[in-house]
Image 1: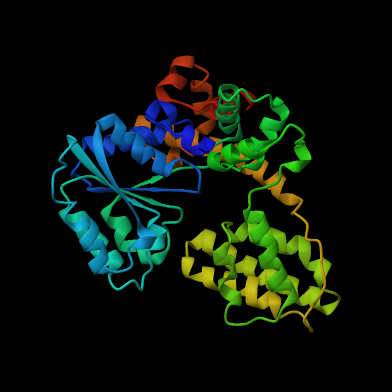
Image 2 (image 1 turned 120 degrees about the horizontal axis):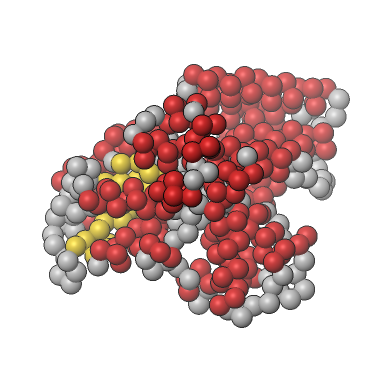
Amino acid sequence: MGLCEKYKAGCFIDIKGQDFNIEKLKYFIKNFPQKKAIILHGPPGTGKTSLAYALALELKSEILELNASDLRNKEKINQIIGEASQQSSLFAKNKILLIDEVDGVNSDDRGGLTELIRLIEITNFPMIITANKIWDSKFSELRKKAELVELKELGYRTIFEIIKDIAKKEGMSVQEDLLLNIAIKARGDVRAAINDLQTIGLETKNEDIHERDKEEKIFNVLKIILQNKPNSETINLYDKVDMPLDEILLWLEENIPAEYRGEEIYNAFDKISRADVFRGRIHRQQHWRFLIYQNLLLSAGIAASKKSVKTGFVSYKRPTRILKIWMKNQAQKYRKTIAEKYAEYCHISIKRAMKDFPMIKLLLKNTKAIEELKLEPEEIDYLKKG
């Protein structure tokens, strides 16, 4: 049995770093059927499915799980969960319907999403839907029908404590600096960190711990973009990498000079600058339709900048700016999550909480206030260092 399976959460107390979202889940159940479905969305390894199963155990409910990638059409969805959404459980007091990885339902799946929305409207039981990415336009109607709860990447200190505890229970003698390195390089994915813990040996060193397998994928994608002429598949390559375009841009910026020469470099960086213009418009004006242009420029645009097809091996490098950007984002992330909890508790807007954050930090010097907001260890550390 793998460590992920062995140490999966059995109840809410087993889930670390998601206290705020656990409260939201409890509120959703308490007020059902005010909203009949809730969407847990966020990066892989943040505990979306674990939260659903923990809720079922807390409520002593039967859980019916379906992976949305298997539900390819309206008839199939209705056949599997249509009756289940209406009928009481034979062996448990309650029932929870879990639709896992709804990203797997495509917009052209012959009414699959439409039927899922219809089932939400008629279900007699709470429906939990999980997704890595829920902001695609194809999910616009689905988002209107459900409560949205975003799970953030776990802080590295929380992941460190989780794998340290597992190592202790397993009788593993692992140096703390190695565990800390695993936690940092898991980049918020606790499942990935546990898998890394399981695979390390006695001779494993810090430098042997690499970023998650998404780096292997970005290496392959970079090779295709930078060494080949664009084709009909080029624009879709980034969809295969679990990495935002902003981060992909940094990988391109770092490695273009290793493949291109002279005018090729000029043309490629011209495409990056144009993509950055669209990136700014997206963030300032929320014009998400510009995302396709940013993607096009960073994929086919850069591939078209070369004069001839390249061959041979080139060693691509990890962007040197990523770690610095990540550390800065971590600090800003805790500022925002604290503000969100404060805003929820005080019934004010998040925007106002962010504006008043200097005053909030002074208020949160009080230990009781920290307990009331259920702040995580990383958030408390942020307040102490600030």
